[in-house]
Image (cartoon, rainbow, N blue to C red; front, side, top):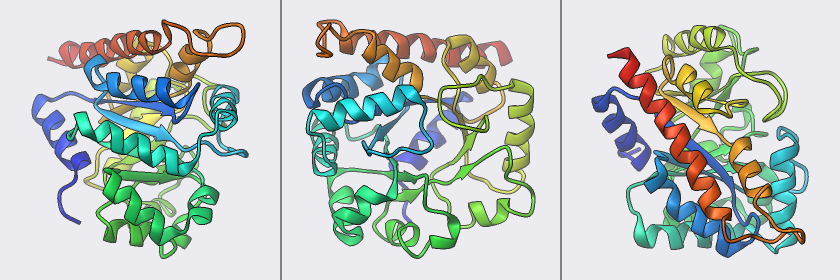
Length: 279
């Protein structure tokens, strides 16, 4: 693969000697226009990489917050085609921020793998995280994605031992996503010391950046994780910021996008604080 936006962003962050803030939102939550407004404002608020969730009816790895976000999006008519349209619209004003689509294989399979990869690359997608496709299925989507210039980002977990890790990272590109807790998203807080130990274990096996997610909700937690990782991923807290801003009918309020952007700015300050404390 040639150098991607993901590679360029992490190279720049390495020069700055700081971790990335990776922000997850669900495409189409609570509606397409508001979701796009949120996405467009993330870089200015401090996001270095954007993960855009592809709504799916049966998200097995997601907790209540992201499940609810997906249901709101699906109820509003969000489809994978519309999600790619969001990326395309985002790229009109931003050709630098990496965009990673995260979700499950079923919507991609239904779309058609080759058609999806072609359309995703044309829209400006930089990476994929497909949580239910194991390394044993790399020929299915991972390797074809790389042929289209799209990084395929794998998950490592607390149960990924030294024997399994080489298989997990074999065809990984962009970065490795370390799931800091066992279980579903947004339910437990990570242990910074254990995270740092596992990040060191992964980095001994690959030159790729290692980003840590699942359970990070506050600037203080983000700072603690950033001290020992190349990136911090926050998702459930952001989709909760969407939910708590909705009106009584579940519609976007005047403050919905701003509420998410305020939280991202606070998290970005926490990540930056970890860099300053290390100096």
